[in-house]
Image 1 (spheres, rainbow, N blue to C red):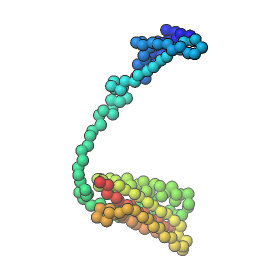
Image 2: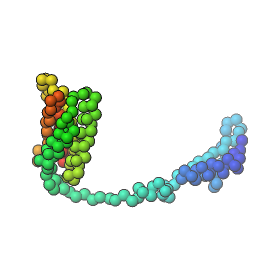
Image 3: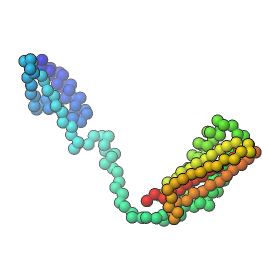
Image 4: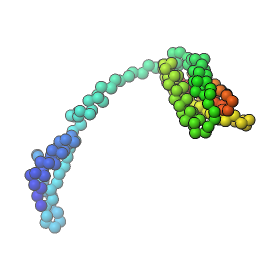
Length: 179
């Protein structure tokens, strides 16, 4: 059974749209099947040399060269971050009462606000980890621990504990220098 000319044109048109060129226009061959029927064969070749409209933006990337900088140009401002932690926790939790669902949402909101304000300090090459814990003040104790691979010369943290009549909050900001 032969492929009709209309089907060949449609196939060629679809393949051109995809960035492929059909070999039907230049080379057609038929292979004999064991039962005496002929089978049309269609092969395609993709061209990577011709950029499509989508790839134009990928060619505009800027190549950055190594700076060979092994340490930070300035240290992370821990005192300023401590003030940010105090201000954010006080503003968000001063009048709040402990409610589990509200506090779950508040931990997410407060950590995002803290992260945004610390990022505004524009300290380059530091990765930030912000953790906020909120719990109910019921006379029980809690121990919170964390571990990290640490370079004591470049990496640091800031921490603040907030308490009101019904809840406590602990906010930690860890800053890890990334070479």
